Amino acid sequence: MTATARKAEGSTSSEVQASDRLLIALDVDGTLLHEDGSASDAVKDAVLAAIDAGHEVTLATGRSWETARDVLAEFGMKPEYVVCSNGAVIMQRDADGYRRAIVETFDARPVLEMVHGFLPEGSYMVEEADGTRYYTEGMDSSGWTLGPADPVPFERLAREPVSRVVVVSPSHDAEEFLGIVEQMGLRKVTYAVGWAAWLDIAPEGVSKGSALARVLDRLSLPKDALLVVGDGRNDIEMFRLARSGGGRAVSMGQAPDEVKAEADEVTGTVDDDGLADVLLSVAASRAL
Image 1 (spheres, rainbow, N blue to C red):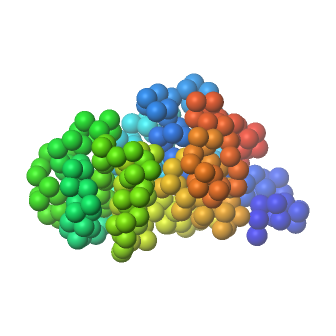
Image 2 (cartoon, helix red, strand yellow):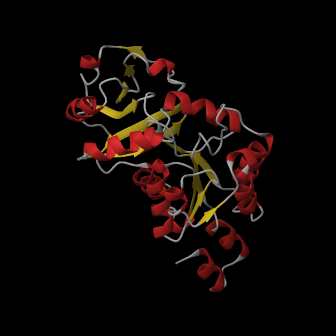
Image 3 (cartoon, rainbow, N blue to C red):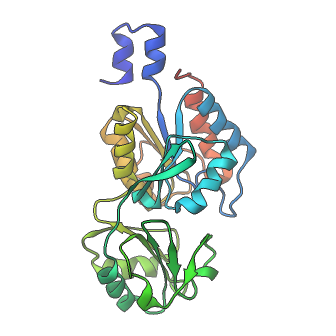
């Protein structure tokens, strides 16, 4: 039953407010943060307004926990759960901070060998179950914030099961890279291509959407209580989850057309503080 239907049945004021509580899951780069990693005061204020209204505001990011946690602090967010590594890692708040509540892993050796055959000059990174990351030459100069990570030869990347694989190939533009990835015919994994020549690979069936479904269940919230905002191809599965349950899926204005097509609505670009408009629209109606 949707929140609208519950209101129509004549719930009391406090029941209506409680039923309107949302799980608001936000992508980080290109949604919360600008390309240079900065955040606007307007978006920070809107995040706090949504939290003050009683909503559960969290991250659903491709970032590893080691770089996502600083974003929480910057925006004053203390959610019970945080979705990291494109859904392969779900962090849970406890008395000491956060712990890894759910970690999905897979044997990356076959996919690494196959991708390397197509992109021998690419740079590679893997993240193991405990958050340890290893990378090959060039990844540290790709413009991406690696956080704690150690350089290794390609052959040593997949010594243990991993939660994610990242591949970058700066020598290709976005269109060329998309074509190469399509030729690979990746199987038995979940993957997404980023803005440039960037490939993110997760265990089969694992995505931001699959992780948020688990978070909704743990929070005892219905699917129509989900609001998601993002700008990348790795956000499509969480868009589909929100839309399938009567929730709200919002694309940032600068997203690729195929991402916008999966959303219910399109807000302004990250440079125009499009996220602030979305969050203020829900903060106006208090959840608790």
